[in-house]
Length: 233
Image (tube, rainbow, N blue to C red; front, side, top):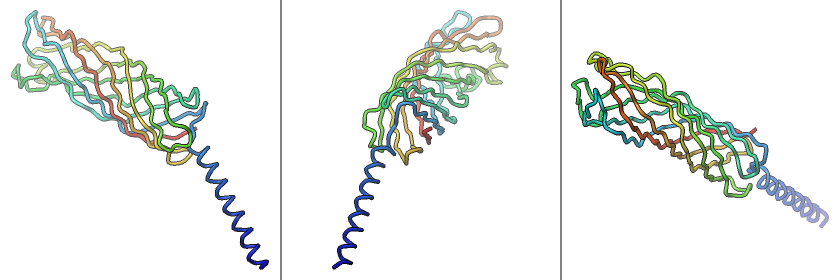
């Protein structure tokens, strides 16, 4: 009888301890709190939804516009929670390089590719998390500002030989918005996926021999996909 009573007592204590531990984990391990820092690294793909005005050279409309291809790089971001559900996030990455192509096949007899540009699109967003701290799945939405730095603009060798030179694209300042989600692995590590839209508009200028050329409006406006692994400090 005493053994039975002792077993029941021990079993009750263990069940109580496990229940208390589970409750503690569910209420604290999954939480984001004011003052938390998140650092993430992973893959970021920039996929332009390009729309460009026609190319003008020497005052003549060539009847040809431009397209910009996609590129994937190492994506990095850091976020700071100013409340339990609101953070400020900075998106950074290694430089993206994009082929710039003619919208029609080989219009100048120099191939389909006009040149290549490199850019960095740092973005600052405020993100709001919907669910309570006990949820391992943490979806959010965000909006903010982007400044895209464009550099290393180069024509292909064939286009340089045809007399094209001095390619230059303006930097861009615009809005950005995103939806994303974290999945908490434990109280420190999480997986992240997000989709952003960035307003990137630019103009291009160049030389054709001694004549000036231009593209007055290039609306790159990319969709940016990111998959990353994050850590909470």
